Amino acid sequence: MDFKKLDDLLEKYWEGETDLGQESALRRYLQHPDLPEKFKKEALLFKYYEEERKSRFENESMEDILLEKDLVEKRIIKYPATLKSIRSYSFLKMAAVISLIAVSTILIVNHFDREIKPTAMVTDTFDNPEKAYEETKKALLLLSSKFGKGRKQVEKISIFSESQEKVQGKKNN
Amino acid sequence: MDHKAFNSDIFPFKDKMFRFAKRIVRNEEDATDIVQESFLRIWKNKQKLNTVENKEAWCMRITKNIALDKLKSGHVKHIQPYPDHFDVSTSLKESPEDIAEKKDLTGSMRKIISMLPENYQQVIHLRDIEGYSYKEISDIMEVDMSNVKIYLFRARKEIRDQLTKLVNYGL
Image (cartoon, rainbow over all chains, first blue to last red; front, side, top):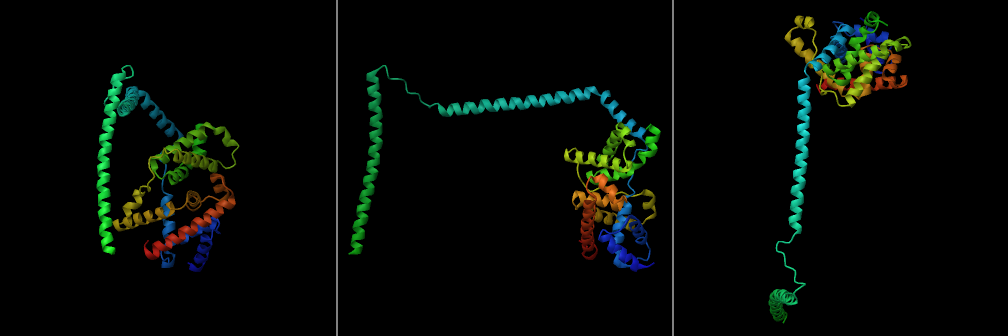
């Protein structure tokens, strides 16, 4: 066998320049029992293509296909109960999802309601001026006591800063 | 066209249609469904067969379109490497070492080709496995002949590079 010719043919093949006749000849050449090692990769490739060509479709005629399709149809008609149960199962799933959404919505709305409403409601005092005065007084006393506490803290800070200045003054001197 | 003529003129394309569908969807079960669906569609449109120039290319094109539709719609069960195909009569004559080597080789080749872009895979399949002409491939793939040549050149170049790596470095 002329391996030089095979070499040239393969080069043309890789360049996409071979015709169908030359590609068929390549298939024959690459099955040669004494093929040199340098053609190994091409031999592997063409062997793989040969294997792929062996794959077959199982149906032997158009009647086979029609028969098979017909059997599939019959199988569906034969088991309507199964189809019904599938449908009711889907309905149950839908119902479960809707219930879940409804329950979640109620819980969220309740949660926000609770957050908005104050925990202790103050009764209205518009109609009773004396009670209104008392309530206002209580509120102002509460405010002043808190304010007083704040002032004491500020005083402590000012004593601290004064002492700090004195210490620094000594150091500087 | 009656059943008899259909079986004798059109049905013999079944294996090529099956292999092409399998190349696209990568599993035998879906490929079988696609070929059955293709034949039913061809049967329904059998009056068109009289006006079609190349019946085989027309059948292959229908197969390709159904396979691609199925792939796009996500109705394909799962894309996986094809199960290894062995002819029992051949396997019986081969030693376990031969079978293991062949299995390994088939897997590597399949991997190399499956890494190619979809158009390249189709053109390699139609030309190097099925032996179609550029014109037929152009009809089947519905692309220009110049594009078929470009796809084929690029696909073979990629296969050559990958094969060189596999043979020389075992990658």
